[in-house]
Image (cartoon, rainbow, N blue to C red; front, top):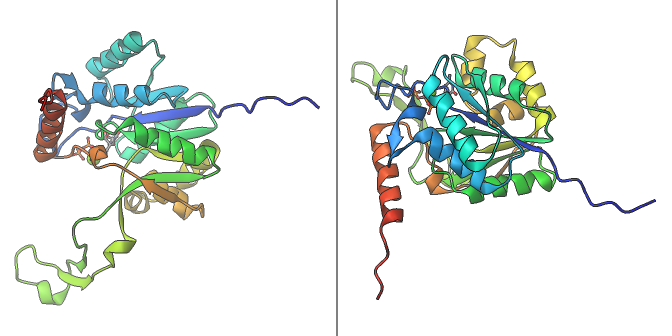
Amino acid sequence: MTDSAPVPPRIGVVLVAAGSGTRLGHGIPKALVPLAGRTLLEHALRGILSSGICTELVVVLPPADGQLEQVCRDVGRDTGRDIGTVRGGAERHDSVRAGLAALAPVDHVLVHDAARCLTPPAVFTRIAEALAAGATAVVPGVAVADTIKTVDPQAEAARGIPDAALVTGTPNRSGLRAIQTPQGFDAAALSAAHADAGGWSREQAMAVTDDAALMERSGHPVLVVPGDPAAFKITTALDLLLAEALLARDRTPTQEP
Ligand code: CTP
Ligand code: MG
């Protein structure tokens, strides 16, 4: 028997960028919105590629958007990387499924939101390392700063008071994590979990808001590793302002003492 070097896992990234950005309200797909002179999609792509972990990359785009297609081509040319594209669906899980179907065979897959376009490369590395160490599903998470309450908006006590809901519980904050992306998985297990969910009703599908939840439902253990505050999701105008401020801070030369 000869000793051979272990074969590194093939790692695919599915970057979902097919959302419309309704809450941001720019009237264009969110991935196309400019941030410090670059589109959100370009920031997201450069972050992924600079982590150096991915062997395959597929970007899921809104139907018929030539400008985002062009961003992928430009970044691909600039970085010497092959960036695949595919059209997304009506909901995020439809887009993830389209991305998985378009990905070349890989061992591990990371699903990432283009809206988390400032995610530090170290988060990608952390997820890839946990998969290499044997995890089937691993997500980045950060501690929750707010006190979280469960509520019942239909409760009798809240009737007649505009937008009120009745508090039904206060989970212990130490047991909560706010989950980010990239979420990493054994590629075969994630594809099987998506295939299982294919026959679900719309209500069932809408209740599952991330890929890790699909894996939980399929009985797989899901690990949480430290995320990063900079991996926040740009959802509203306030988030975009924060992203602009972070990039402006990074561009400001530090004063010599
Ligand atoms: N996404 C997607 N396909 C969809 C919906 C969402 O690829 N049908 C992607 C978005 O592009 C984003 C990520 O999923 O990168 C998280 O979604 P979200 O932040 O909700 O973005 P949008 O759906 O674009 O925003 P909104 O819900 O305000 O319209
Ligand atoms: Mg959305």
